[in-house]
Structure formats: C-alpha cells, structure tokens
Length: 37
Image (cartoon, rainbow, N blue to C red; front, side, top):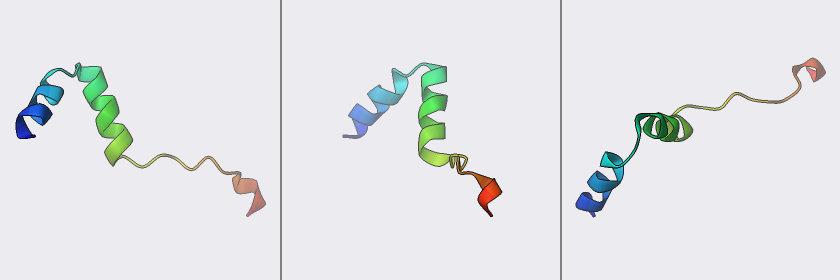
C-alpha cells in the first residue's frame, strides 16, 4: 500500500495537491447568518 500512496502523490499536480491538502486539513469558513445572534 505504501507504493500505491507514493505513486498517487507523485502523480498529483501542485494545484491538485494543495487543493487536496486544504480540503483535508484546513477548516472551512462557517457560512451561517451572523445577524441572528
């Protein structure tokens, strides 16, 4: 499985790798309406 993961990461473009990292590790902004508080 290690080799499969290495091959997957090696085949990523930079923008795809950054997008994947952000979707996994960075929190998304809350989209709620703050005027109700």
